[in-house]
Length: 137
Image (cartoon, rainbow, N blue to C red):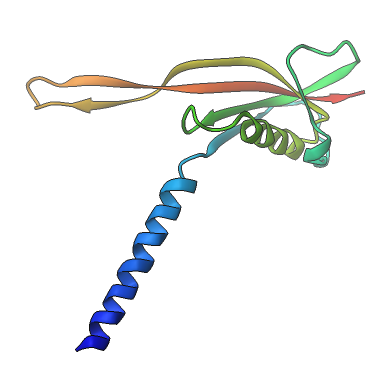
């Protein structure tokens, strides 16, 4: 009887430890959406470590490849993780840089609450970052 209790206790402990690990590390994610320009040039992937994150359009000649949209799961996601996600997505298009053109909170979703006769729509606000992927000429 004791061995069954010990095994059950071990499984419960492992489950609790796994749940805590998931709660502390699994909540900080960045969703990425890539939109490559139609009819635009295509390049092989570049090295994400070499992709620059810019806040203004460079004066150096370049060509636009597409847009990368990032949506962090919460406000606690570090800027370093957001920039890494932008670099990785822009590198898939072969970009040399990603120019951030939009970084604001906006409505990212909605949910309905209440009974059928008195429904209420609640909006979900979230941070949205849009960067234009460019390739230097």
